[in-house]
Image (tube, rainbow, N blue to C red):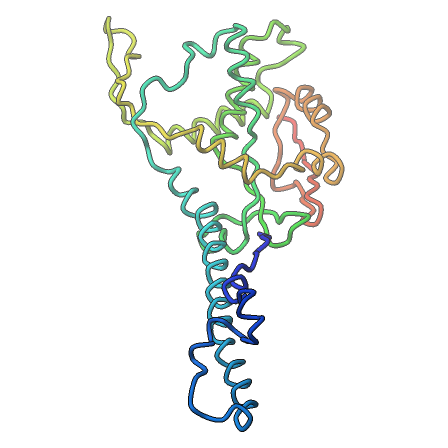
Amino acid sequence: MNRNSHYTGAKLLVAEANDLEHGALCSRCEKAITGETSPSKFSLLKVILVFILCQVPISGLSFLTFHTFQNRAGTETKGIDQQDYFSLESYNSTGNLYDIVDAADKSPEADTFWHDLQKTDGIVAVHSKWAKKNALPATVAHPDDPASKIYQINVFHALHCLYRIRNRLTSKIPLEKWPRNDIHTMHCVDHIRNDLMCHADISLSGSDEYVSFNSHSHHQKCRDLGALQRWAKRHSWTGYKDYLEGVVGYDFNEAERVNMAMAGKGHWNKAQSTLDNETGKIELWFEED
């Protein structure tokens, strides 16, 4: 983190104009240099003493300014990379989670809601030392910053999966042209299954007619997704998609075309797939069922 530090301590040591006219070397030190001794005999000694005494406050202010800067920088780094991140784990009591009901429906309001959610992909860059200190899983390095690692905040992966599933459920494209049982979509179902089982919601929901239990208390405990989105944007790797397309050679449209063509016909053999650690390029091995 680069910061410009302006040294202001010098202003405290500048003598007033009247003092300079009377030959004072340092207005702060003037009272300390007094005595009955002869000016001619000890003039050199006086100059040396003035110089030494003036260096004491200068050095002290310099030391204080430097450490203030260091502590401020350290506090900001800690606040952004550690304290802020882990505070996102807390659950806050909220009222209406979002100003929308039945977001799965096919409506302009719901479409806007989902498109807004997709604006945050959750791909972030964090300091390698911070990642190691907090025992984060192994991951790829930032291609332009060796001191950083690349991660994705899991909830945005899950939201992407829900977005994909909703698009297929509400689509008017015939199944033969746009299969719903492709590998990507089926992976999304399993990803959401894992998240639901891992983060089991223990809220007690009520019912009005014994059939559906969809009545949620206004005290339902939820995490602050807005705060998480802001954290993700502050640490976002903005060049992610360009790197995928330009360096890794990953074409989203082509990958989706192949994914659709292979839907229901087989599975990816991860054991036979290869990964180039330098570029991140993946060669997938597809096996027919």
